[in-house]
Length: 295
View 1 (cartoon, one colour):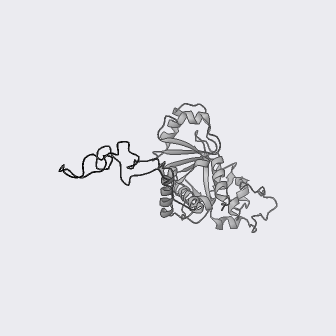
View 2 (tube, one colour):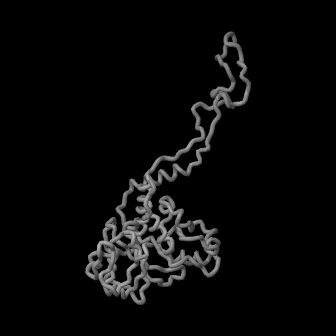
View 3 (tube, rainbow, N blue to C red):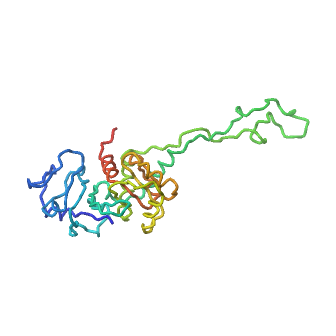
């Protein structure tokens, strides 16, 4: 579903300066620095090029007519940091235009080792670590020697709270601790980019104009889910506060989960084979990936 935009094609349409300015004065340029620009199909046909600055590569396309097919290249090599064009729709399967996804977020090289390490970090960090066993001094009971050292024919013991007795202590047992392991922020951020790239390359990344539903009935989600091919679990990502109707419509469906964009993580993406994101969620994820890391 996702298709890449060839830089070579866009260079033939128009020229950009090193600061991402368009040479033609008639074409709109986004100078607000927020990473978003509104484009139309006529702009692309007249020579609109992608910004060379990677932070300005996520643009919303709302064409008045059919998107030019010569700009869509379905056959591509993953991991070339190329911007992706993906159609925008909604739960009613309405055409809402196209959206350009930043290549440095949605088209990075796949690294299974990074994914493995990030998942290990997530699972280790979420462990409560409240497990606890009692040592010899913590077990309640008498400290009296059970019987004489010699003369009984039995084995010698000094206490009944030892690990060899029923109800006794546990030697070298677990104690409350943190299972978290250290992982650099750059690696964590790269893991999320790789997971998003994998879903986009599989065609399992869907972008919605909004996640609004007419009613809170569960059948609204069920009907849309039945239309999806080869889908078992769906993860819905909302950019802002989760809509109350959407929350009520999905709370009885074990195969549909909703999270805000701030909570999007690698493990949740891997647990769901289809990722549905709103436009606002995509913008916030790209902004989050482009935010400098505080050291």
